[in-house]
Every structure is written in structure tokens, then in C-alpha cells.
Image (tube, rainbow over all chains, first blue to last red; front, top):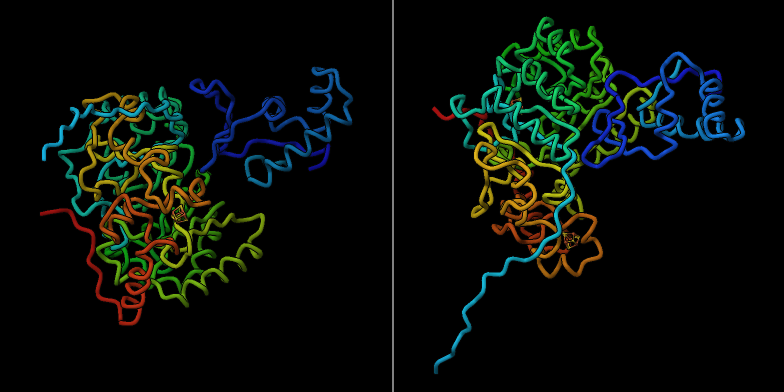
Length: 90
Length: 376
Ligand code: SF4
Ligand code: SF4
């Protein structure tokens, strides 16, 4: 993915709060993925309208971290999700 | 000589509480318009009168979600044979479960699918019995089934449900594997699950008719490898090769009582859908015992949990925590002992008998199907 891509959760994939285990999970066909902090933060911003650059800027501000570093992490995470067909982009 | 035995104290091994289950398969009904000879349902099918009601299923879903289940697979039989399928899906979503419908498509219409969409159905798994009406309707034992299924697939695509195609492969259709994968892609599936027939339930009874040859299995592996290249990024291909031809068993159920459970149409709770073939296991019912109690300490779930129950061969094996000794139902079916090492394992003393059985079944023409039928 590139900074200009606008990621979204495809139909059949959704975020869910697992109240028994007390963790956020991403649910999809044959998948229940427990999200770590990075995953939770990134997917919390994914709305299908904003691009990766905008999402990264927002996260950089929230976590007071350099935007280049955040953007690299965001892209790495989303690429991994896309390879598992849990995230798509326009 | 008199030996004085101390009074035996019944040993209740102290077990740590198991991790909560992730997935639950709900067999809503055993009714099905199709009669596939490879069906994994038990030979003794439950009749309609014995099925849980809508409200009882809703209660099971709530209990499952409270227990930690995230994914619900609605299966059967044919779930669409339940007139209340839409309410059942709505109840599952209300309970907070990710809801997957496993169906042959027969009994679904565009209108019913729209209602399922509104009820929140997350995902559809559509089975295909063959790539054209001739084969599919012969295997499914239901004339016109293939054409109906194609219509249902078009409706699923219209609504946009994420779709997985399920194909059970065996002696009579392994030659069509490439065409099956192409069909899945053409129907708009994002995934195809190709499972070589597992010999349980009706499939076990039809084993000689379904048993693939070693050449077919090798050819299938090549076809899948090529298709994974051809369809990369467009269609995910899951392939379960037949374990009879493998050297080591599959990690059945990811370990007994570790991640998933099954509810039979009458509410009986099973550690795996074939578990009823194991004599002596005590199954409990959600109508009389809370699901959490059954999962956490029920005798059928504890019977093969962990590694204590394993034979010496598996206990000492480096693959103990990889395949957990394999499938208990298969050990029962072939070795006649549910506690034995899975006979598929090259290290099992029963492997030679399994090889002889494969050779015998594949050296002659397959016998006719014995179709899955409800008892009269
Ligand atoms: S395998 Fe065939 S007969 Fe069995 S439930 Fe599925 S569609 Fe029906
Ligand atoms: S001996 Fe048991 S644990 Fe080892 S590979 Fe065979 S079945 Fe698995």
C-alpha cells in the first residue's frame, strides 16, 4: 500500500470487542485475530474515506511520534492485513 | 493368599480450567434435500421433532458468547430447511457472534437471502457437489440441485455476501479439481475450501465408493499448486489433502476440547461432530446443563483433553503438541480403540492395516453410493 491508498474493511470483516478475553479482535471468514496496540490503533482509524497519509498524521499526533516512522508501521501492518484479505484499499 | 487392597479413592484429577472456545458449529437440523454419500452427519439422524426451537437456539448462542465463542457456523443438514433460519441468524448476531452460514443453497431464494442480509449474516459458505448438473445431481442425489444452486450463487453475488465455496473431493470428482476451482472464481468466491473426503458418518459407510487413488491425490496436489499461482490475489485456495495418504495425522479439532465445540440438532454438545461413534463417551445436553459447565468440565470434553490420555507412543513423540495424536474418531473407526494413536500415523502399529485397506478399496471398481437418508 502507499500513503495515498484509502484502506477499508471489506464486507464480512469487522472489529469486535471480546469481552470474555478483554481484548479487541478482528473477525473475518475463518479468522479471529487478536489485535495488539498497533493493530487496534490503526484499524480504529480505518474508515474507507481517509488515506494512509492522513491516518498516519493523526496517529503521529496522538502518540507524539515522528510521522515517517508511524507511516512505515501503518503500511507494514496494513500490507500484512491485505495479504490475509482482511483489509482492502481504493 | 489374601491381599488387602486399600479402599480405592476415586481419583478426580485436578485440571486447570480450559481456555474458552473460539468457534462453535451449530447443526440446526439434520434435514437436507440432498443425500450426499460423503455427508459427515451420523448414520442415526435426528428427526425434526427432536430439534431445538428458535428460542432454545437463541439461548445457546447467548451462553456461547458468554463463554467466549466468537465465531458461529450454522450448519446441518441444510440450515435453510429450518423455516426460522432468519430469526436464528438474528439471534446469533444479537448475541454478538460472527455468523457464517454453511449451506447447499437449496431452500434459499433471493428474498430469503435479503432477509438474512438484514438479519446481519456475515458470511456464506456454499457447497458444490460437482461442476455440472450431471455429476453434481448424481453425487447430491437430488435432481435439479445444481441449477438451483447456480441461481442461489447469483443472488449471493447480487447482495454481496462474502462467499467461500466448499468442495468435497473424492474418487468421482478429483479429476474435475481445476474446473471446480474455476467455478468458484466464476461464482465470485473469495475463497475455496477443497477438502478431500474425511471418512466419518455417512462418508465412512461409503468409504469404498469414495476412496481416491494415490495417483489422483498426487495429481490434485499439483493442480492446487498451479491454481495458487494462477489465482493469486483473486481466490484464496485452502486445500485439505486426504489424511489417509499422509504420513502424520491432522491435528483434529486443533486438539480435543481446546478451541471448538459442536451442538447437535437436539442440543447434545459434542467435542467434534463425529464424536458419537466413540462408545462410552457421556454427552450432555444444553437443555439440561449450562454450556459453560459442559465445556469446562464435561466428561466427554475431558476424555481426550491435554496429553494424559495419550498412548505411550504419542506421549513420548516430538509431534505430540503438533497433532495431539490425531483424530479420536478415526482411531475408533480403524483401530477399534478411541485411545489409540491415529492409524494414519506412520508410527502407528495400525498403519499397515490402513495401507492394505486403501489398496483393497482402490484396486477394484467403486461400489454404488449408499445415499444419506433419514430413518423411515
Ligand atoms: S453433505 Fe450433502 S447431505 Fe450432508 S448436509 Fe451437506 S448437503 Fe446435505
Ligand atoms: S506418534 Fe502420536 S503424536 Fe507422534 S506423530 Fe504419530 S500420532 Fe502424532
